Amino acid sequence: DAGVTQSPTHLIKTRGQQVTLRCSPKSGHDTVSWYQQALGQGPQFIFQYYEEEERQRGNFPDRFSGHQFPNYSSELNVNALLLGDSALYLCASSLERSNQPQHFGDGTRLSIL
Amino acid sequence: EDKVVQSPLSLVVHEGDTVTLNCSYEVTNFRSLLWYKQEKKAPTFLFMLTSSGIEKKSGRLSSILDKKELSSILNITATQTGDSAIYLCAVVKAGGTSYGKLTFGQGTILTVHP
Image 1 (cartoon, each protein chain N blue to C red):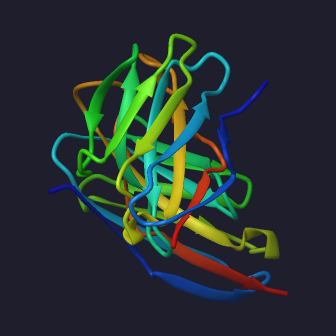
Image 2: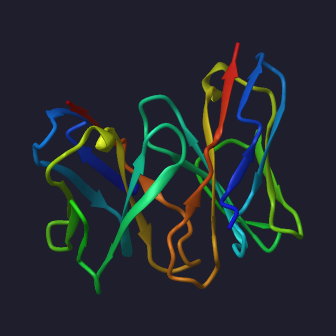
Image 3: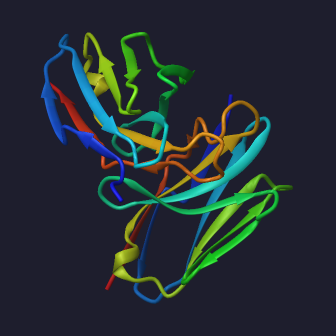
């Protein structure tokens, strides 16, 4: 039973560049949420996708955007990278209308130079 | 604004000690509180507490939800070095989607020395 998988594991970018992170949900899950975890902090909710639409959004600027594909996988895009975007980006999946908690992937460590 | 606060922020103990981690929350329309353990990467689920399930136990770990005090505790007895991790508390609000946005606290870093 494949869990949540994220790619790449690590990424180094420079200020102003853009980045795309990818997530495949746990088998059987249809909802994907993205979180940003800065060093020493708890994860912060970015947004959630269900049925290929953004359903909820946290307090993040429009530079952060996403997409969900028909196979439920998802991408997180960040434009015009800032030093403050350096963080661990976590993807979590769940099944809509279930009573089960979200399952997390190992994350992508993004470093901005 | 929804708020989740954990204490202490860090804790150092020796193997065999018992620890209690605290989580308090201020959210409108509370639905559930979750505890996760984060070792190096992915947070792994420990417990979910709701109005219908305010106490959970699994081996040496247990958790209680106090809806009156808007708080929860996570207890770990007979700690082992493998318990060293960041313990995260998160709340989910009622209404809208099922298990949508998780609002996390800043975490408690637990270090267990041999």
